[in-house]
Length: 113
Length: 116
Image 1 (cartoon, rainbow over the protein chains, first blue to last red):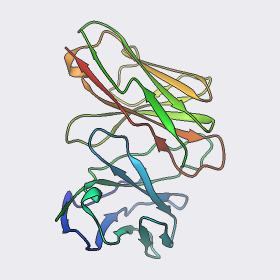
Image 2: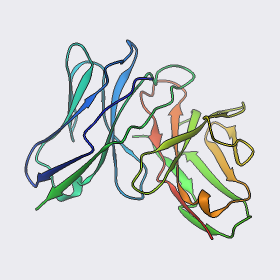
Image 3: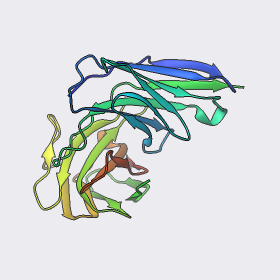
Image 4: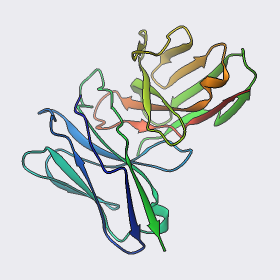
């Protein structure tokens, strides 16, 4: 299982763009990169998933360079409600047996007014 | 996205009693479910992987006789904490992976267990 490394915490202000980078140097060929958001006392919520290049949805963008050894979650114009812990996970969930995900420390994002 | 529920959302019990937590996939069939435990200010720790119709696979250091997992159907997995003690107090979270086509796990809302 590929290990991930993220900054422990980040601070931002409302309206700013936030970029959280995750390192996963030993990512395997079949591994996908998935980001989750977790609020206190809630289960993680899926944000975005990608394999390579760029993926965008209604809440975030995910940038993955060609070597796939890192990825960057981009949150445009954050608000106070984006204050949460963000986890980057790497694994092959498409295997029929289901690949278990290993959660790293996550990045605690604090958005200030 | 797919919906996963947990019941109860929180439970308080006396030391020595057993507690059952249910995890249900509401709008899809889950061949695999995962159980995690999370202590305050810490990350999620995988406890076990549960496949429908077979025995669960436990992570190293997790006592299978203390944390009983049953995945009897494609929409339900249960975690029973037997003879609970205060150190078992934690936030328990399940996730589910669909039978086919799904690309990611969907997590339940979690169950807060407090053992007195």
